[in-house]
Amino acid sequence: MMTDEHNHFIETWGTMGVLWGINRSMARIHAYIMLSEEPVDLETVSEELNISRGNASMSLKELRNWGVIHRVHISGDRRDFYVAEPDIWKMLFSIARVRKEREFNPALEALRSLLANAGLARGSGVYTRMNDLEKSCSKFDRIMMKALGNEKRSRMMLDLLAVYKD
Image (tube, rainbow, N blue to C red):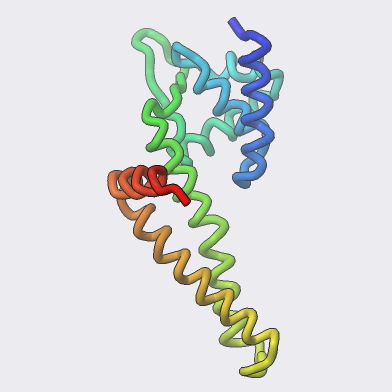
């Protein structure tokens, strides 16, 4: 049974999902599935969240591509059912990896292309700023590659950072 707290979480997760670069419906579906004790099917998702079957279907497929839900089969039932990734760290790790690939990598490539091909005068203020930005982003990229290259290592890195105090 959906409570006000369930609905509030679903709506809040939907709003936060937009910040990840996914649409609100997709994030709401993800929240709904995370809150479900039992596997849920397309019809249930569509009805409970009051969204079209087409939207629900496309969102479920994309959530599977992100690695945050899984399709399961129930014996004797021809429908597809979905469950949330049970390992929360694995779920967050998947989200971070996809976001890096879809957002950060293209931005870094655009920055590098700008520096190589835009004819910016070396030593100019713009060139210096962009070059400093590229150096900083490249360092950040190396850190992310270390963190996102191995799930176990990234968990250990986060645990180490979590105990650090100013």
